[in-house]
Length: 396
Ligand code: NZQ
Ligand code: ZN
Image 1 (cartoon, rainbow, N blue to C red):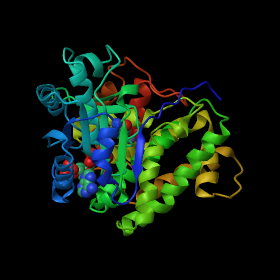
Image 2 (cartoon, rainbow, N blue to C red):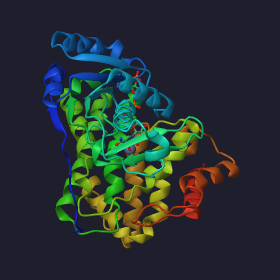
Image 3 (cartoon, rainbow, N blue to C red):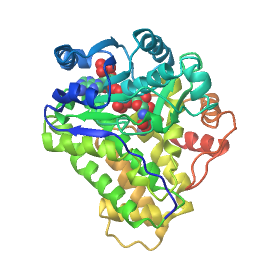
């Protein structure tokens, strides 16, 4: 087990009607002037946003709001939110929504606490790690990104279409209100995307060069089994409280780093997905499953035993294989078949891109490698040429 630091300071309010505790949570976290952040329409349509407004008014908590956050959230709206938070003298930012809204709230919280620094130029381009931010609270409406407990925040630059994330302790929300019933209104496609993303946060940690972490592996495998069992139930019956609860809690645990302790996060598949979402505005979960199978085949020989273990422990594959490579391939096929069974894309065509030109493949590899300036992953580090080959394999 490698040395690690584990910091997961988010207070969770989980369960039916948990959103009724919003004012209490805000006061607990020291907020009194709150900027509410929400997405396009869903929180207003469901009545959630109105109920929160009414609750805050009743409790005398002053607030302003900014809406219109889109999936693959844009830098321009985050910058607008920073200006609003500063003018309003907000002392807390409350996200009502999913990963896109939460990440915008995190960016606003960083910008408002560092008003002399541009969030993109200084923090997203990596010149500095943000050390201060306004406290962020979350009312979660979709189980997916895990941003409600994670240290990450991901934005897309409107001008360059570069999508990228930053990691910082200050990004961990102070509290997250998690009522699985709030996810009952999700469209099927968003439930699918969420299931995929939740699994991928654990898979991108499971395939690591630092192995031998029994407890971490067991947690990771249990999480994957739980999502594989409950995801299809939630798709069939979105108002099944048991399934929605399991998926919601797995979403948080999958990305608060518990499933990767003692290893080194790989996150190659996430990095491969970023240009697909940035350039083509593809949903995050879909961009992930579209490349996972080909990434897996490409890197498999670095440690086929690891893939074989996934097949055994997660899919209960008890077949005896004459070679470990066959067991690994079978495991990859199990995972790809699961993604297909829930209607997720597993190549560029099913992602909706068709077969793209070589010029596009090269542009994707340039973007993913930051113009050949970085190598990602550690299970099998991949550079620009590897990225190009993986995109090429998925281009069918
Ligand atoms: O905008 P509205 O109308 O609210 O609709 C949203 C949006 O269209 C809808 N939705 C959310 N809750 C709903 C609902 N519709 C009906 N009923 C509800 N209860 O769902 C759509 C997708 O929302 P979004 O917030 O984009 O989803 P998700 O949570 O999947 O977030 C994706 C974003 O998070 C980033 C992704 O890259 C992507 O930009 N990620 C953030 C991470 C982090 N901060 O730790 C980690 C992830 O790996 C990921 O990169
Ligand atoms: Zn993700």
